Amino acid sequence: MSLLDTRTAAPPVPNTRCRAGAVGLAVVSGSAVAVQSRINGELGVRLHDGIAAAVVSFGLGLVVLTVLVSGSRAGRRHLNVFRSALRDGTLRPWQCLGGACGAFMVANQGLTVGRLGVAVFTVAVVAGQSASSLVVDRAGIGPGGRQRVTPARLAGAALTVPAVFLAVGDRPDDPTSLVLALLPLLAGLGLAWQQAVNGRVRAASGSVLTATFVNFAVGATALLAAFAISLAFRGWPSGALPTQPWLYLGGPIGIMFIAVAAALVRFTGVLLLSLATIAGQVVGAVLIDLAAPGGAARPGPFTVLGAVLTLVAVVVAGRRGRTARAAPNG
Image (cartoon, rainbow, N blue to C red; front, side, top):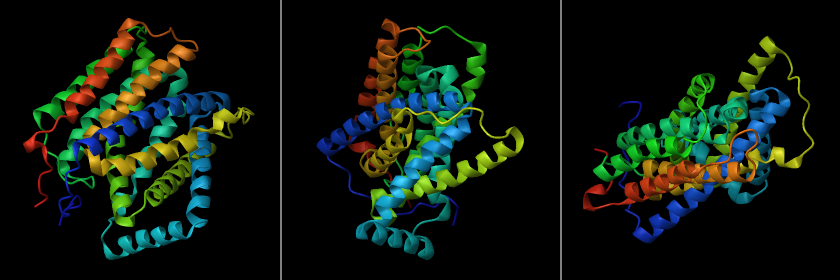
């Protein structure tokens, strides 16, 4: 039996209305990621340490989730179901590591958004996320089983990358920024896998809250290890903790995003979920830059056109014919 053996009973195909609602929610959650990127990026600038900013963001999220899970009978029951699934092999240990990818994503927000800006950061994330979504869906890593790479799905993913590059076409090129963008590119590669395995945890535990808690627990552990190494080599962050409350909302926003993704991935598949969240990220990034551009120029017509093209990509990828049903995991 291979490491990625994901043989499960084929889930029912959701109806069109259910899928459309799931896509709409995914777009909204994606726009929240753009807000989170700006918040964690600014927190990293204030602390002069992107990893420390990620620890604060993930740590606050984990505190909130710990209270929610331990403070409710249902939360404790589903956590026990999760443990039982691990013991009996229903859930594999590697399927619980999605939080490590989330930690890398949040660390990148703190490390790079201050220099790249939200839109350029989104470009790099999208480039990785679009490619990896096809692979993750085809491998059947998510709870929805294997998804065929139909022409519509392939076209939707292919449209996303040029659309997002068009969305930031009004910004000047910076060779240093392009090199720095490799970090969020790698983070984007991990996002699709994170959404898929978090969906597996949700299915095994029967609880979105439990899946979100596991994600944050794993991510916080990874970030604390990285922060300890950073302390050993660089010392304590030179910046002081800011007093503005909004700079601590990154963790709660992350809870919302992870919970929504874990709940929706079974209805949409990893690729369509990723494309919908990408659309939200792009539109959110444009709106953020319009409302608070900071040191960057306000979005021009090409930026708006790129955002519209990204939404078109989501619609294209969401078209399903009879051949678009999940392939069996035999």
